[in-house]
Image (cartoon, rainbow, N blue to C red):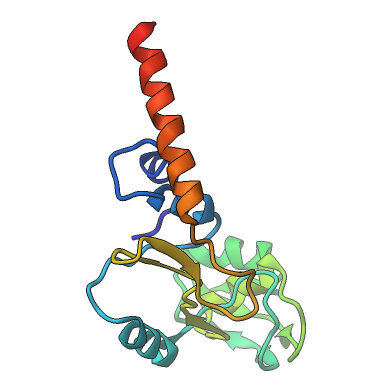
Amino acid sequence: MITGCPLCRKGLREGAVMPTFLFQVSKKLRGEVGLLFTNRTKEEVNEWFTKYTEMDFARAGNKATLTVSLDPGPLEQFPHSMEPQLRQLGLPTALKKGVVTLLSDYEVCKEGDVLTPEQARVLKLFGYEMAEFKVTIKYMWDAQSGRFQQMDDDLPESCGVSEEEEESRRCQQTQRGNREETA
């Protein structure tokens, strides 16, 4: 489940009906992140995601993993209606007898280049996958201990909550509830 939407974060806020301190998860839902709910062990989940990778199309800002050059000639994989779009992306194209044709050699990118949006689009149109998709587990909430902890060693320490903080939170909720009843 991808959780970049504000509605997902709103459902995970302090005071909502959920296990204690699970609201801390909402603070971490920024950017391209996801939630996984499972009864598998931490070790099983880490092992699976460590092995899981897939090739994907590079996006603008990624580095090119190889040099891609296109030879002149017909580009029969594209319908004639794509010719203006290819030209707009910088390719020297024209329609010849209704067939999209590359008029001269065209270097899309060199290995190590930081890709522009146009280069990334051209690479995708021609089927060049230069990015590796993988998932990094950053946080884990343990239902038994009630602790929310970071998984990576290079991240700051655990987000767990002490018993004193837990008691303080309960008192604040009770006081809030009492104020709402008298209002």
